[in-house]
Length: 597
Image 1 (cartoon, rainbow, N blue to C red):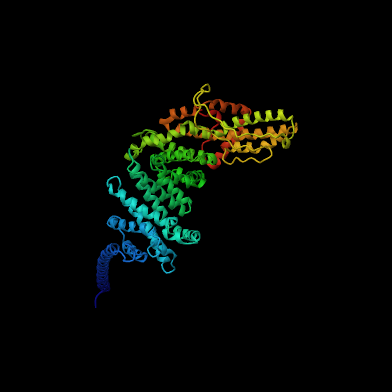
Image 2 (tube, one colour):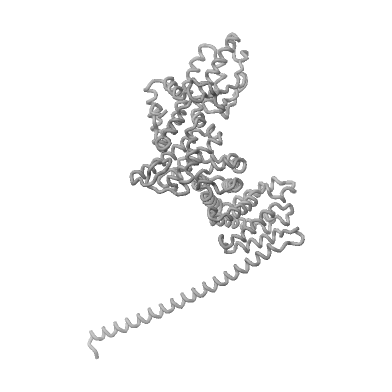
């Protein structure tokens, strides 16, 4: 017998030996399983590669062979099968030539009048509708991947490929252009039913959002330079495709944010679209893109686009502001109907821009920007080349036309009230103080022109700011397209003409007081915008101050201050506005008396 101490040592050695043997067996089994998995993956990968090559050969053979009864075109069923073969393990770089061939076939198929040869006609067939709708989503994702892989700045052939891909996208997403629907009697019913299917195809992470990102990247490579690489037709196709995707997506808040981040931040986008003319600009105006973007930027939940969490740097934010200013000037409905929202959106962008530049200057001033001055973040070379175009866009904010539009309430109120009171006095003297129903007073449509330069100059500008059409005293006024104070004044004409006694003077004074209060807010909003612009755009401060000196605008502003009460009244207005601004975080409120005008 062994001592107890030696027995314990022998037992521990046996246990340790058994544990090592068990660990070795487990490790060997894991290595065997790993080897089996690697072999299975390798065999599967080889099989998928062989299948992919086989499907590509079948795809080329199916598209090269024409159907005997199709007049040189394959049927829709064959095109559906061929597209499925190409989309299997689709590679946007290796399969670019094959996809261009498929895109051409899709364009010709969508224009076919025969249902047998029309690829979109499969959406109306019960047996093929689900497969065609699913494949349509894959085609949109493939087009987005192709646009993201193209390099138009280094390969001129990619411009032609992009045109073909965009033609296929527009042909598939625009049912009004499908040829087989023209022969149907209930065409409108089919169009209303096809729209939800197309909207579902553009939904999802690889739908409209991915397409906007790809188009924005392509636009940046083509426009972020001294001279644009994109032709007017290609630029129009890119903008039309992006607007089509946003429209089918419902213009949700996420899509509008993507539109702002990826497209509106492209330098000189709206300037190049305006230069392209009918090829690109009408789509932006008809889709009311400016109004949607302004409304989104004016919302409180859109603050991440103008806050520290914004994905836009100073250069892209400056391009966004420049494009927004020019787009709003091209679409006058924005400045007529959404003037406070536009001032709010532009002020938010300017405030964020000023923060970025101030933080950069505090760190180290190592980069020079022709508009922002010195700050720390380096600029993109393409952005620097396109900065003259961006500067011209920003100068529109300081131009005479924009100043007239932003101060249209103030400029139009005085002319309208003077014209109204003159005609009221002449009509009242002729009628002998009769009632409004028998006086026969008819107020004409007033239009006014602003003098360019000093008040003594006799030259007049070609642009006019029309005021609402004035009806007779017995009919109601309609002034939907005029600024808000003018609309309110037009609605109060009947009361002014009807009350000829002493009891109407108090009501007229109250109405005039309301008008002056609204004018104070309108003028204060415009002055705050220019105050932010003069502080953020340091290298354009002289242009901003020079642009504000138009005609007798400062004199009109001071006349508004004098006619709006004492300094105590303005102090209460400023305090109330400051309280509202601090609650909503809209912009830094300044009194009108401190305006740089």
